[in-house]
Image (cartoon, rainbow over all chains, first blue to last red; front, side):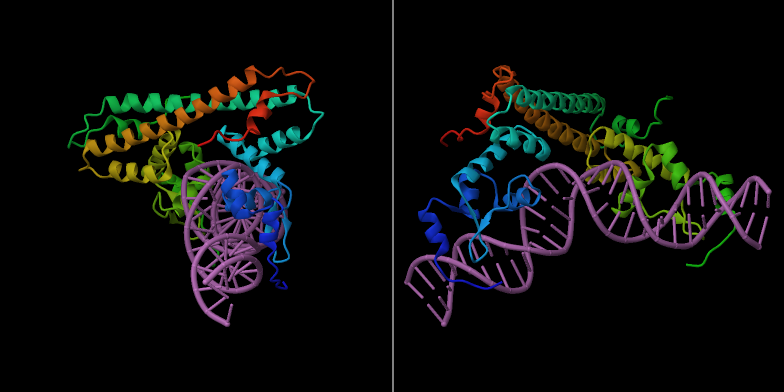
Length: 150
Length: 150
DNA sequence: CTTGACCTTCCTACAGTGGCAAGGTTCATC
DNA sequence: GATGAACCTTGCCACTGTAGGAAGGTCAAG
C-alpha cells in the first residue's frame, strides 16, 4: 500500500518492541515459522508499522519462546494451542495441563515403541546379511516375502 | 478420450492381471498410495487399458508388497527407491543393501533417542505437577522459562 | 539519493496419508 | 439398449513442520 519513511522501527526499538527478525533472534523461532504460527492462529496477528512490518512486544516474544520450548518437547501445534491458552488463563486448573502432558507422554511412548520394533526387526535382518559382494541378501528376501497368512 | 466397451478388465483378470483396486487389496497398499508412488517414480508407470484403467502384473503387485513392508520398517520413499533397484538388480552386492539398512538403523536410533529425551523431560515435569484445580503448574513454568544462558 | 539489510507476500518442495468432487468405464441385470 | 452399482480417472484440498526462493517494498545510514 502507501509507503512511509518515518523511522518507525527505530522508534519501536526505543519502546522495547521487536521487529520479526529481532523477535526471532531472541526467541529462537525463525521469522518463517513466526509467520507460519501466526497464519495458523497459534499466536494472534502481530501489530504492524505503517510500512506493514510486524512488531512484537516483550510478552509476545515470551510466547514465542514458550512455543519453541514446547516444540522441543515434541508437542504438536494443536497441543501447543491448548497449552498456550492454559498458560494465559490465570484460572486454569493444573490438572488440565497435566492431562495434556500425560497424553503427550503416551503418544511419545507409542512412537518410541513403534520405532523400536522397526529397529529390532531391521537389526535382526542386517545381522544375517553377509554384506559382501554376493547378491544373496536376507534383508531383500524378507522385504519381498509374502506376508504371513492372516 | 474415446470410450471403449470391451470387457477389458474381465479379460485382464483371466490373464492374471490386476486392476488398481485388486492390486491394492492383495498388496495392502491403497490405490491412493499406488498412484502416489507411481507419480513419484517409485514404481514405473502402469500399463493402461483402452479405457485408461491401470493394470498390474503379478510382479508389479509383488513390488507393491515390497514397498509396503519397507515402509513398515520405516524406510523413506527415497530409501525404498534404492532398495527396489538393488532388489531388481541380480548383480547387486549384499553389502550395499546392508549399508542402506545400517544407515537406516542409525537414523532410527537417533529418532528414538530424541523422543526418549523428550519423554524423560516431560515426565519429570509432570511428576512435579499437582494436577489439581489450582493454577500453579511446573510444566507451564518450565515452558515459559527463559532458556539457560548459552 | 543510493545502498544494503531487512521486511513483505506468495509459491515450491519435502514425506505421507487421507478426503472429496466431477466425471468416465465396465459389466450385469432388466 | 438403458440403467445402475462398483470401480476407475484426474485434480484439488487438508493435515504437520520446516525450509528455500523470487519479486518487491521499507528503513536507516552514509
